Image 1 (cartoon, one colour):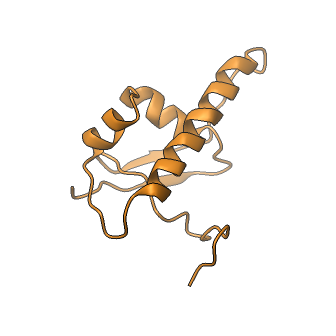
Image 2: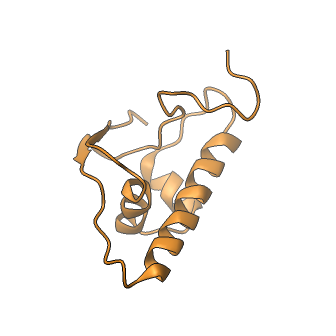
Image 3: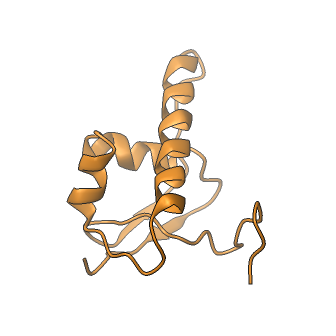
Length: 94
């Protein structure tokens, strides 16, 4: 059982996805710190929204990104911004 402020090593809850996708770490031009700051802030918002979901609450991919007012591309870029290795995001059934 996780205590408050602990992060599960498996990164649960996982963000919803419309299909299973493999992602490599994002390579952003170091000359554009605004992009990295923006994507970092959006990722923080995504994971905070996931924490705020009720336990066992199902939410569809489109409903989730619409609640965040994000476009699908921005959502995905925000998630992969901090990756350090290949990662799989699985499709959610909702």
